[in-house]
Image (cartoon, rainbow, N blue to C red; front, side, top):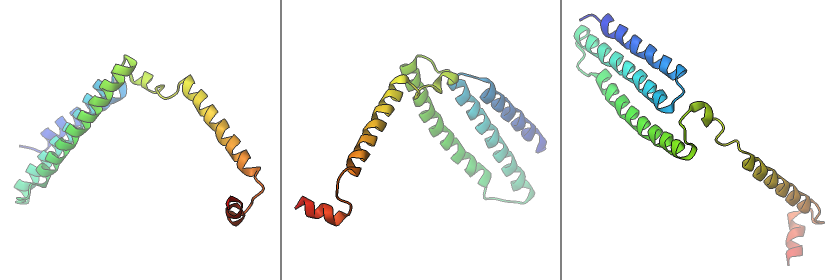
Length: 143
């Protein structure tokens, strides 16, 4: 078998994955596109490993071992990503990626940040108003 067949198939799968990653707005479809891209890379790794083992009489099969590592990594990534997407869907009611950008930017958070900044400024002014300048003077005043 020629090396061109799996390489062309892998390039097509990777291109479909890139299109899905850029064109889709649903977070689950984006995760599926990333998985498709990883599978295209795995196909390339195995194809080149088989080609090298027949050409150079290589018996280590490093490409297949790296493919197993990539599959395990992709399974962990999908598990964590799907848990995050489900949590966001439960809280927000949508898994639309455009709406996820505004999750941390709410008016209540802005008010809380302004209050915290005012409290920190007041604490700095109170520290500056004390007559003691050095740590030794502060220690003597504490006695």
